[in-house]
Structures are given as structure tokens and as C-alpha cells.
Amino acid sequence: MSEDQLNLTSGSPWRNIWQLSWPMVLIMLFNFVVMFVDVYVAGLISPAVQAAVGFVSQIYFLVIILANAISIGTVAIVSRAIGADDFPEALSVAKQSLVFGASVAAALTIVVALFCRDIVEFAGFPVETQEIAGDFLRIFGFALGPNYLLLISNAVFRASGEPMKPLLTMFLVALINVGAVWYLVFQAELGYRGIAIANAIALCAGSVITFVLFFRSRWRPLCRRPYLFTLTAVRRIFLISWPSAALQIAWNAGTIVLYNMLGRLGGESITALAALTSGLRIEAMLFMPVFALNMAASVLMGQNLGAGNPERAQELGWKTATAGAVCVSIPAIGIFIAADQVASLLARDLSVLQETVRYLRYNMAVAPIMALSVILGGGLQGAGDTRGTMWVIIRAMWLVRLPLAAALTFWAGFGAEGVWIAMVTSMIVQTILMVRRFRSGAWKQVRHMADRRR
Image (cartoon, rainbow, N blue to C red):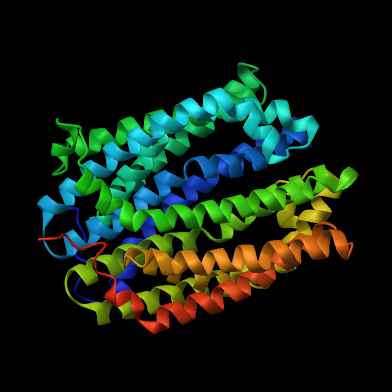
């Protein structure tokens, strides 16, 4: 075990959770700072730019879904290998994941560059935001490769119990991004394009930093040839990654459908889109500890399953989820009460401010149970039960959220509020299904996807 690697398969469960989660909370903070600055600066330019930033973010998340899926598969397999004290296996999987991710990113970059305008039109952007969104998407497309490598590299470090390395990387990425946004938008006078260019620069810098960290650690062989992937290794990664990709496609496609619904509200569409963009960013701030604990649960359960201790893995899953629900409760109450003041951090226009307040009050009411679902889902993915998690999310989104949102928004005449009500209702259903899946213990039997065939 290296000096900066945590021992996550023995000792106090609460100590393990703390050791792994606090660096990830800071990583989430740095990610939030980047998103907050992007939306804040966009709001200073115009509500149309702010709405476009939020909408394009959903499109871009859809494009990097495979990177996130590969990262989840990498964490599940590498964490088990580390838990079983099999570093050569962890090294092999990590290298194959990086090469596979780079190949996928190269293909997607070409698609985005050629069809960015068509993608924007098909997604249903309001006419006044289509040119802005197209420019954003084209610039983001050229940063796909660095973004893929950054996400997968950080997943490797997390899975091996080395959270300080991605913490350093994301701190520098956030620092570069914030400085570049302010310089390019206001000093170089590039306008809204400066936001996208700053993001691309920061992601490129981040991918370089991660490879420097690989080169200076036990992961140095990752920087050596050959850089070819084998079908056997890709198959192992694919088996555990494809449900995560399907889950994220279903989730992000559903979110785009919600944006599309809001974009069809006529004169209220820009207000509703900007409110959703602002509300999601504020919600992301609240959920930083939750997503950190989601990633922690994934690694903790993966390593303990690899060490042959499923009961300890289950204990860690429940305790991590409980910690997240408790952590989110108090700030959620505060945001519910002071929604006007919180919303004013991002929403400048009065109508956007009022709609953002309404969004926040609906979603803060169910924040603790949302935390349970998110963290238990992370634990299930770390255990390799990506199919179970996939079906829970798909049912909640496509069988509850979207039909209910359409019914309330257009048929019942609730407007944007109908979407907010549908979001809350579907999250309650999702949490119930996720808790049932975790309690069933079926994930303890999911070994064929993550364990090496001998």
C-alpha cells in the first residue's frame, strides 16, 4: 500500500467514510464553483445566455455519458482489485479504461463538430438561444477528449483510495476556469464564447495534471506503451458500464425533455428555463456532500466486496446514506426558509427570481430522501449492480416524472410549476425503489461482471 493510499477494508466504518468523503466534498465544491461562475457570468450577460448555458449543460452531459459510465465501471472493477490486493489487475483495467475512453471521445468529437447546429435544433432550444447554444456546444466538443481522460483518471485514483490526487487536480481546474472566464469574457471581450473557451482550457489543463500525477506515482506504467485495448478487457468494462450509460442517457434525455416542455411555454419559456438553470445550480451546491458520499459509497462497497466482506460493505452503504440524509436536512430547511435570498445569488431578473424560489421550495421539501436515493445508488454501482440502479432511475423518470409533468404543465395548466411537482413526486418514487433494491441484497451476488475470469 502506498503512503497516500487509504485502508478502507478495516477499522472504524465512520472513519473510513470520513477519510474518503471529505476530499470528495471539496472536489464537489470546486465543480460547483465552476458551474456557479459560468451561470453567474452568463446571467450578467443576459437571461437568454443564462438559459442557453443551462440547456447546453444538459446536452453536454449527454455527450459525456460514456465517460461517466466507463468511470463507474472502472471504479467497480479497480476498487475490487485493490480490495483483493491485486494491483496488477487494477493497473490493467485502468489502462484499458483510459484507452477505451480516449477512443470514444475522439469519435464523439467528430460528431459534435459536424452536427452541433442540428443537435441544438433537434433538442428544441428557443429560437433566440439557438445560435448561442450552437457556439457553446461546438467549443465544448473540442474539449471532449481531455474531459474523458480527466473523469476516468480521477475515477482510478478514487477507486484505489487516493482521493488527494483528484482533489489537487480539481482545485487547479477550478482555479484556471474561474480566472479564464473573467479574463476572456470581460478583459478579452469575447462575450458568452469566453465562458465555453475557459471551460475547454481548464479541462485540457486538468488532463495534463492527472498524467503528471500518474507519472510520479505507482501508476506510472499507465503512461507507457502499448496504448491498445483488448476485446476481453473492453468487454469486462462494457458489461458493468453499459447499464450506467443507459441510466444516464435516460436521465439526461428526460431532463432535456423537461427543458423542451419549458421551452414551449410561450412568453414564459425563457423565465422557466433560466429558473430551472439557476435552481439546479443552487441545488448542486446543497448536494455537494451527497454526491461526495455517493462516490465514497461506491469505492467503500467495491473494496470491501473485493476483500470478501459483503456484510461490512452493506453496513458502510447504510451508514453512508444515513450520513448524507442528515447532512442535507439542515441546509435544506435553511434554503426553504430563505429561498428568496438564495435565489437572488443567481437570478437577476424579477420573474426568474420568483420562479426560482418556487422551484427551490418544492425540491428542498424532499432533499433528505433524495440524498438517500443518490447515495444508495452509488453504493449499488460500486457493488457492480448497475442494472438494478438503471431500472430504478428509468422507471422514476420515464414512467412517473415525464408523463406527470406533461399532464400537469399542459393539460392541467400548471405551467412551470407542473414540472416542479412532477420532479418531486418522481424522486419520492425513486427513493422507495432504491431502498427496496438495496435491502434485497441482490447486489451481493453480482460478481460475474466485476471479478476477473480465471
